[in-house]
Every structure is written in C-alpha cells, then in structure tokens.
Image 1 (cartoon, each protein chain N blue to C red):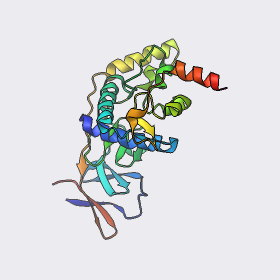
Image 2: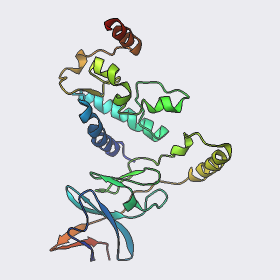
Image 3: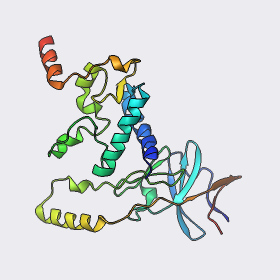
Image 4: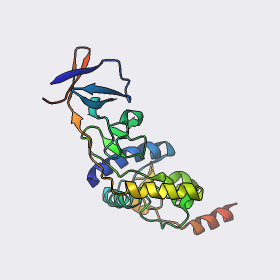
Length: 116
Length: 129
C-alpha cells in the first residue's frame, strides 16, 4: 500500500469532517505532510489513524477519542487554542499557525475555571 | 471487448450497481467525475463491494471497512477488526479470537479496474479479450 495514496484519501475524508466544525488543514504544509505520514504508519500498525502526538492507554473508549480528526471530543480545549493538539488542523481564520501555542488541558481547565 | 452493463440513469451519483461482464463480476460506480468499474469482490475476504459505501473516489467494504480508490483499484488500508475492541462474553471472545487468528494471514489485494465508456445511452465496460 502506498502511503501517498492513503494520505490523499485521509485528506479527503478529514476535510469533510473538520470543515463544518470551523477548522481547516494547517497552512504549514510541511507539518501536515509529516503528521499525515505518522498517521498512515499508525493506521497500518493499529487499524486507526491515532493522533501522533497523544499517548494511548489500555482504555479502548479513551483511545477512540484521539482518532484523527479528534476535534469533536476536545472541542472546547481546541477552540481555546484555535488549533488541534498536534496542529494538523487550525481554525479557518488562522494564517500563522506558528503563533498558536499548545496549551495543556490542565492549564486550559484552570483558566476556564478562573474565567467563571 | 466492450459490454453493456447499464443504461445512463440507472446509477445515481454516489451509487454503485453490480453487473456481470464477460463472465467477470464487476461493480459500476458513479462519481461526480463519471463512471468507474472495479472488480466486485473485496481484495480481503471477497465481500460484495456494491453493498459498501462510495464517497468520492473511495469505496469502503461493508465487512471490515477496507477502502479502495476506484480510479486505480488500489487498496488504501488494512481491514479493521473492530470486534477486537468490543466487550463480549467469554465464549464469543474465544470464537472471535479464533476467527481473528484465521484471518491474520489473509493478504489484501488491489481491485481490478476496467475502462468504462458511455456510448449513447449505454454504459459499456471493457473487460479484455
């Protein structure tokens, strides 16, 4: 199986999922290529294209929440960062993805608590 | 050898129908880009692919969700054995594990593709000599 063909298919399917959520592929094409390469490798090994930047556990249900695109499972957190955890997707209005920081969930939760 | 397998209008966009042409089982697929024909049986365990789903140029097998590019016939992923993750009674789990061990050695194959031509109202597939 050719990785490039699978990447093209993943791009097609992912775009249909993330577009209605207000996200798009990152303009950083080098990063996108790298992350999709990792996802194809993970899918060939584990059957599902898990997020390459999040650790899996022994809990299947929990692992399913990090199958790309995992935005629906982490919507508030990712909306706060305006990007998904690994940066494959960013909010549609983002033109400079490097300006967006990865904010750990604990920090996001603390800030959310403080805001309320 | 061009063989008529359907008429224009028989297949809606995004749809698939099975057909036999020159003794070969095929699936005629219609996308926004036109018609494509591929071999009917999944390159994994021979499932009838017209019962799967077609999204753009990507056909997904109804059994283990192997995906194929109908433009090239290329298999894009390995089948997914979802039952591996599902909680099930011990007896069923043993049977499932046994089945999985049998399926472990099954190779994935690409699909055959066949040129499609629309001649008047007829949709014809070229299946070789």
